[in-house]
Length: 358
Image 1: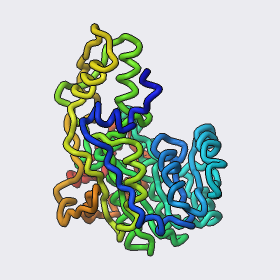
Image 2: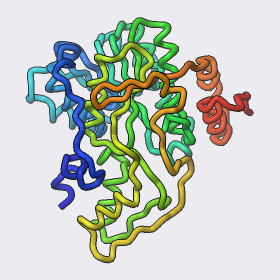
Image 3: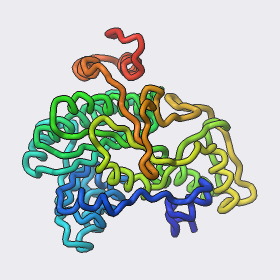
């Protein structure tokens, strides 16, 4: 029953979040995208593929779909092919491979880059901090550098609310990825910005599909803490936000959708149980996992200075950061243990007790 209706449809936004779908689409953005070449990393993922779908109505000249999983890239290519006259190119690339990224940009010469690819599962990244650094931080730096060298107009990093005062590896690598863009902003003519998402309904690894699976299997819904809250948005809202940010980018911005207030995870579970669950469906609290916050934030205090509003978008400004610290991390992380590099990473991201470890 649930699989017949997408969790990010207006119906489920109203059911689960008690709010309406908030479109950011503006006709005025059309001329920014029309007949331009757009490169999307992570194009086969749930958010990346939705960005590709949304882009069709903006009439780009070409879409370059980049990913590391051939099956997901094949699927979105097959879905989009034949739907319009837009040229679609596909590339299987590991963004940690700087030489391969450089070659990709030299060959394709994109006008805009939407960088969606990331490791985003919090508990997994707590166990694999080296991989999180390589993909989320170094991969972003490779793409940002290549964008600058090849005169990309706008580079947008898809980030997360977990980058605000980060308490976990995933959030810390995303925050440092955001901060690295300030360095490239000074170095190149490209405009760099980040878009921060809350939890995206029905995206891979999100809580809603897990809850529905638990309900449909007749099991117990598991939640880590009864007071846990999160900001939520739909996949369509997330994709539109990435595209619609482009006309407002000057450099160093942080874009956020007005998602309303944070929602208790228990309320989401209770609404799903009421709608789809059996009478004996229960909720079990399992305890906070490593790296989890009870409450997420959208912006740090320093990022709220000069906060602007455009339609359904909030626009904050990234605060200055010492790029040498990011370089120190990049050059030394391979030689550190998981415990050492996790602490070093969090210290750098939160500007505290920054002393070389090991």
